[in-house]
Image 1 (cartoon, chains in turn brown, green):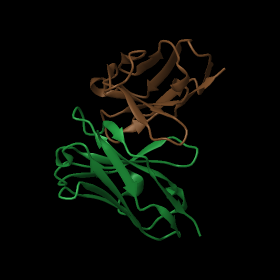
Image 2: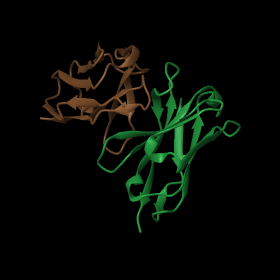
Image 3: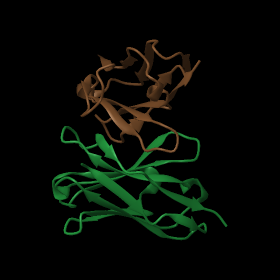
Image 4: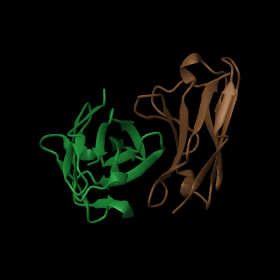
Length: 108
Length: 120
């Protein structure tokens, strides 16, 4: 199975700053089948990005995804108060689908 | 608006059984594959099982094969997860998720989750 490693584990930033989250795969992800999900405490995950760089329905354009092969990035251009959460990358190109361990974006 | 509402969670003893349900609305249920994903307390997300739109094809994580059964009733717009031989390590919030049109294991909408606690 494909192992996804996210870094850093925790990112401490202030509102208005730029956040850059990394997701590295143990082997190449097929057809850039890589998604990013956001999860706030006590809530269900929400899809942000699919296909490595396509924004899901209703997602603000401050969220963007990039990358291919084994290295992927989620960028939040300017952090809003509601963006402080845990972010998971997920590959869905091969079975079993797998998730990274998550990056927590916290208020500095 | 897509809505997914899980039910059926609770406290069960090791070796016991539980059936989760997920009532779906806001989309043509039978058109989409559906999945269960779980999250142990304080941990990350872990895929459990997926079923095709027709129900003809099912897929399982190795750690639940032979113990869990995914099914659906398209006439009731409802997804199920029958869980048998439960273990302490199955303790988690179980989310149902709608699969996207672009790939089988893509998850584009999530329910609020149902907590399953396996303990004596």
